[in-house]
Length: 128
Image (cartoon, rainbow, N blue to C red; front, side, top):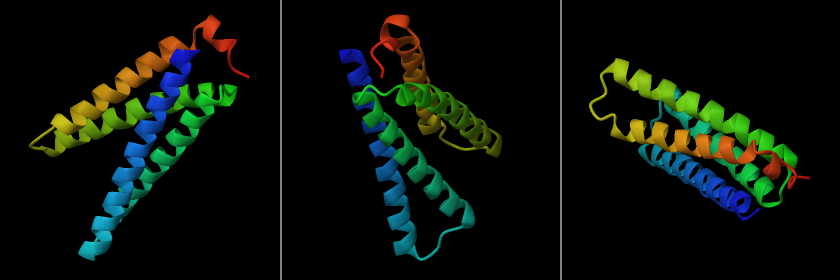
C-alpha cells in the first residue's frame, strides 16, 4: 500500500509540474502581449493535464478505484501525446529534441510503473 501512496505523490508532483509550466506560459504570453492561437491551446492543454493528474494523484492517495483506472488511461494517453509531439518536432526539423525525448522517457517510465503496480491483483484489493 505504501507503493500506491508513493505513486500518488509522484503523480501529484507530475501534475503540479504541468500546472506550473502552464501558468508560467500563460504569464509569459500575457507579459509579451502576443500569443498565437497554437500557444493558447498548448497552455490550455498543459493546465488541463496538470489539473487532471493532480486530482488523480489525490485519488490514489485516498485509494479510490476510479483513480486507479483514470491513471492507467491517462498515462497511456500521455505517452501517445508526448510521442506524437516528439515525432512532430523531429519532422519539423527541431534542433534540440532532448527535452521532448526526456518527456517521452519520463511518461513511459511512469506508465510502465503504473501498469505494473496497479494491474496486480494484490494491489487492486486495496482500492475502494
